[in-house]
Image 1 (tube, protein in one colour):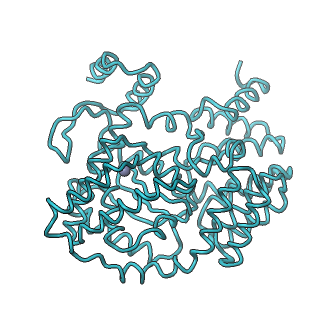
Image 2 (tube, helix red, strand yellow; image 1 turned 120 degrees about the horizontal axis):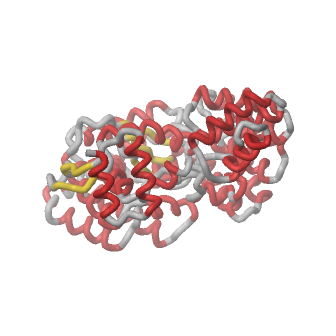
Image 3 (tube, helix red, strand yellow; image 1 turned 135 degrees about the horizontal axis):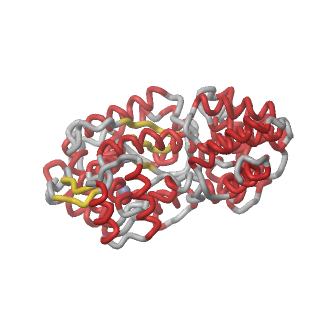
Length: 445
Ligand SMILES: [Zn+2]
């Protein structure tokens, strides 16, 4: 069966790299074939099973959420967003999927879905929305991607696979642009590296499903038009905060026009349905109290992207004046100091960030990296251990643990970590370093 599938793939004209990736999945025991599109009921060529979608989601979504500085600690806000999302998920085409919803701390403007149904909206986009119906439209659109299995489709075409197969050290997206080479050195997983880039057809289908789901949940279809209006105007006045949003969800005048038309025809009776503006404002009051700070962080990140570290630091400090314990602002201060090679200061801010959000892993990465630079390998090793206990499965951490042990001249444990790393990642600077050491130490002949 499997051999047949692979022969079929070979004939289907995939590139060698795509074929190699699919072969490696096949070796891992995944079975490919045709599936029925849960939305249209038509047969679709699908190389990724539902179990694989869920597995990929569980493996990678926690890494992306942490790259976005974790879920907000405002549990009421997360609960509220979950309620809005779950109401629609229950009556979607794949109600059995393990959906979950959260607001992540990142300040750039985006929302995204993993193939198993893990969905996130950033603080940046939550601040831009005007009412609950717009939120439902946003989450409904993401649910549309999950229900029409767009990520799985992208994976079948080999388009989402490089990041995953290549060891997720790929640089892409807004925040990593701000970090430039530093992100590579930090070994952070770049924002967007794990996210699917949808086609225009995907967007059309997700919009149609999104409006269906939000109207089905009782909202006014005007809310969907409101969201499209917002996206349309943001795509015209491009700022760096929206780069990743439009790189992954292509926007067009056509999407807006279609929404207006559909709201006025197919969903005409729902046009003036409730928007629940007051309820949205109530539940986002805590978030909106931090609006000034979040805007300062956005400005600082823009300056960092242009390597204007002093100006960036000024914005992050202003953010901290307004929101002294803001996890992102503290992490950004740490990163900004790392970029300027001020490692002791970077470590201090990373430690403050840990205190402000002890369960979140990212700050441990920053403190660990600072300590490596300060040649405190033992301290750094502890930080990476703390990271791994909070967020397992990031191969970069395996490398850094080996690197710390190398620094402590513990050759055998270091070699073991490097071997473990090379099993997951075979390309890039870290892999070269690990490989060279294993050769030097006689583990590879
Ligand atoms: Zn989309």
